[in-house]
Length: 325
Image (cartoon, rainbow, N blue to C red; front, side, top):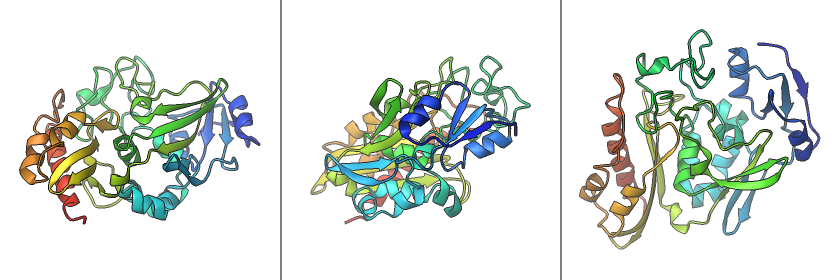
């Protein structure tokens, strides 16, 4: 770990004013501290924002606003989240370990960096860490890497479970910067790697995530987050699915479907949602709806199983909804 200046800004505006090139914000630290130790991130200044007023879970237009510094475990346990948006609680509880969830913040979770081993090994090339150096994962070990949204420059998988559920719910991320405040749809906030994989977010220099707004969706009470991984705990997803369905009797009226573990960002599946609408809630419907869900996928040598795993994950998640009455 390299030396850096450590500061505690007194307000959100103060934090934004002090930020800039070579500055990192410290919340729970569950990602940043690891990357500092590995020399993957080498900021000259670290701003501790934990004392800033960026907490709270409040009603917002019939939905919820979650402060960026709320801890993952607190959000997962909140009765309004558990009752109104079960997929959010489930996604959070399936993330990391209990100890990490007690420390990790919502904003930090959404901004966490990829778990690609090449990105975290400074002795290897990585376009995300050092633009133009190459992507050894394309020809190297790539079992856990992405098959959707990839490019010749990067195939790293997006790591956040929470982001998948929030994308399914049309959530917006709130930002504060030198030019004021703005809100961005979370699905647009994450950028495809293209030729610039080091640009992961629509985050302007010095901007700070202040909260997340989850719109009202009454039928999100009937929702599930399913995570498929190599072991039951403390493991990142090989495939995951956040699904919600609104039904009229046995017929599907509307649906929300997003997947993780297979894309370079959380991946919404609107074609699957459209294929479900108006159809009976049955396994045959689900299998048909996901048939083309992996169109455009570019499997690599070790992860060719992922498109089929993703289809099966979505079907299984939809079947689990049948048990919710």
